[in-house]
Length: 332
Image (cartoon, rainbow, N blue to C red):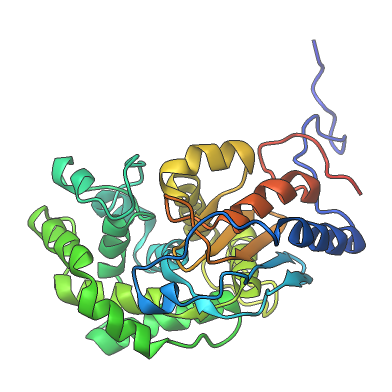
């Protein structure tokens, strides 16, 4: 039987730490080179901007909580954030109105169904799903504070920019294309409203949600945003406390439960960190106390997750020491 540790002793279990800078750079470069030729997956055809993406684009980035950044490949090519915006807007809303309000209205359990499915809303007594699928994300965005659309959009956009540590551009052309075709999301919002699971006007909630999804980011931005969640809401580049520790915890829990939709369990088993994907081809992941990982490749699997980005996360998680469930230090 083990005896209790004395004060100041080394703990029995550690999830490790990030390796030296030179090794991080080498690992990112090698992962990029190894996976750049992977041709599996298809471009999303949901919107013209996604259907016209360059299939060859592939970028990786890591930001540690100390403010160092590392990149490989097309890490600064802009793309649409899409659903990767969900955990960050969740954190912003949680900071503004509290975690209990989120849980009461939105819920936190996985649905096990596609991200835009109406079935979970319809069958749940109060329409609660989780903030990482479209129904729950629209419900979350409906809770954004502010008087009128412009003030509420300012809250969302400013918050996402502070997570990234820079101004993010809105792709106005894609906004118009999405608003003209997002019948599914409008139907979800109306169904949520009938269930009492949405605040305010359903149309405005969908418009806000559409705009947040049409901001442009890079793989480096997603790494910085992930690192901000990993450090209790402190942006590693600007030093700003974007949200508090409780809001980041809620976002990380939601990412762990359903950040990769139906494959979230496999992701946690193989990668071991909360992550979030989007049909724009981006993936962000947060390793608390260590840093954030960002990746971009527009080729998607059947669930809408980036193939190359997912493979890179699986390949790098152990070597970089990101896995929060593995009690073995990373190689130095």
